[in-house]
Length: 369
Image (cartoon, rainbow, N blue to C red; front, side, top):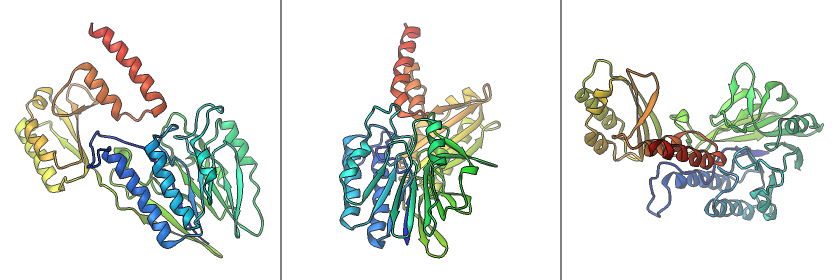
């Protein structure tokens, strides 16, 4: 049996306020394009089964556009008789049990098997048994689901999970609602354990793998190859990582500014951006040990011009006075503007972002009076 293992597609994600030719956020379109590439590959190669290990969507309440796109792509699979099992991840699972899940709509599509009710479900496909556990409402629910799994003799048993893993190393993202399990729950009796949540393609054990995400969603992922696994299950299990063609995200590293003038720093930035061929890329550069007066003397018009071909260029700096990072855009805005810029780039779950922003802005308006 040939299986495709994909995860963390985050449909509906958007960032950087850059607009594509169709008027939509460019990063949102990039995310859709990555998922469409995956579906195109599936239709071209016709696997026996697809496993999507969580965070199909970027939020609990995806936009109509994100839902419509997902439906279009899943219907393409259905028309080709390619079955897919999709477990819900932490990004799309409501906090309250009473809240409905968008995954319900997938129940009406032939060949699409959504698993989203916070409990263990088992499915049979030929000689393969899928043991699917979605993101659960509590850690106790997750523990109960893991302990209720029964390995079926005479079959290839495959487990699906959307969790962080703790062992000798930790594989977690720090999301406020993420669920984490020890490696002891990754049983060797499984032919394969398909994992989602951690965004880097990673081998956890001989039979357990994160496929990683299909796009870059933060600079922590800069430079990482993105894609999915193709699994061949016969007497043994063989896997192959299939990379996707996506927009480059590059961390340009650090410029030590401790002994440089404003002109020298500007020239270094100009040279680095010229060498990298910034066209369409997502870039970040850190200026370290820079005096505030030197920073203010940078030629931001030159920097803006040379970085303009990039989809996004983030220039951050660390002053000699304070050992923390600030985000620079070529100017320092008002307190409210700087707060909005900071919170837009901070990895806060979408369900909390709006409430935090409103509360903070109310405080800022008081201190500004």
